[in-house]
Image (cartoon, rainbow, N blue to C red):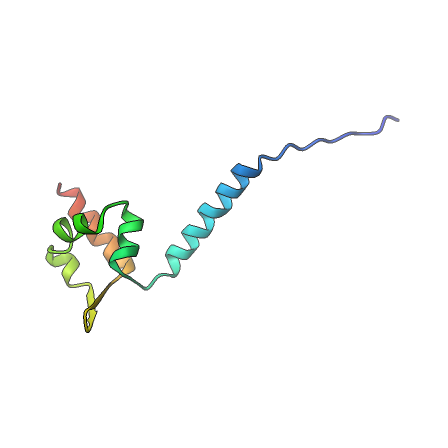
Amino acid sequence: MLPANIEVNLDKQAIKQYIEKRLEEEVREAFFLIDLKKMSALLCMSERYIQDELLHDPRIRMLEVRRNRKRWWKYKPLLQAIEEVISEW
C-alpha cells in the first residue's frame, strides 16, 4: 500500500481578509449609536459631505441623539434612512 500525501495550500492573505471582513460585519451588528466620524468611515464619504447632503434630511434628523455638543445616531434605523435618501438621488 502506498502512503498518501496530502498537500494543502493556504492563502494566508485571503484568509486574513475573510476573517477581517467577518469581524467587521459582526461589529457593525453590535453598534447601537454611531457618531459622525464612524458614519464617515462606514459610508466612505467625508464628514462635510455627510453634513451637507444627509444630516439635513428630516428622516435622519429624527434619529439624532444629542448631549451637550456631541451628536450620535441610532445605527440600524440610520442605515434604512440613508438608503431611502440615497435612492432618491
